[in-house]
Image: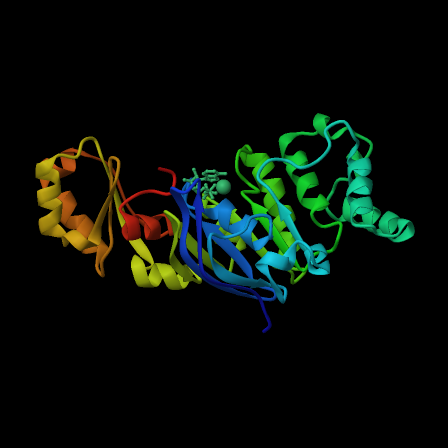
Length: 313
Ligand SMILES: Nc1ncnc2c1ncn2[C@@H]1O[C@H](COP(=O)(O)OP(=O)(O)O)[C@@H](O)[C@H]1O
Ligand SMILES: [Mg+2]
């Protein structure tokens, strides 16, 4: 497969002091769907804007669609890439349809072709019914869908979506995810950033985990889980976690096999049933337990074991 994004040792320092990216290297092949997962401030937006050519790195080299990062925005190749920022990009006082016309005009798409394309997009992504409605009058989920569809008007080879599911209620999130799943089947190269683990797990065949400006993992979600946490973990929610609890747990599991997130302890290991029974059999310890369950591991667990923190903070 053709490599469409290739970054080597990219760093970005803002205002001579904030190191937003620290030596990031990344290779993306045509058709891949990649999730950029990491907490706020990890550097996801900075990385995406650099790939889109909107921001220049402080150091390092990159080639996107065959163009050097420095020349991308001045080349024809920029039309083959869409970057949809986290904040909505439409004109609020134009209708859905008018927004797409404006966007198409900016790309200088011939009128007839644009008309067909807009109709197709509106139908395909379920905005046809609301095509006459002002963008600002749409629900949050529809607004986000409009933003993404505007990024599709140029039929891009690379689509970069910054936190497309953030800040939406569950129903709206589901409707945006539905759209993203549809996009997945088109075979485009897609980069999605998120700090919502489930969305990345659902949509992406490859996850790039970022923390404090660095890429700390890059693999298929299942591959990462098998390597870092195992397929399942034991999750114990305590009323209170004190020294005694930690000591007891330390005797039951090995310290490197435990991670703490607030009142929760996540334990990995080979025989989780035996571990959970040991906790149950310790009366004093079990008294303090609210819930105890063996469940499938998630990328949140992976992040927790890698960093000692949760993605959600
Ligand atoms: N324009 C900017 N000027 C100064 N600092 C910035 C700017 N944009 C981002 N940062 C800082 O760079 C770091 C990475 O930010 P960002 O790329 O937005 O991360 P993310 O998208 O993962 O939340 C953060 O510490 C953030 O505060
Ligand atoms: Mg961001």
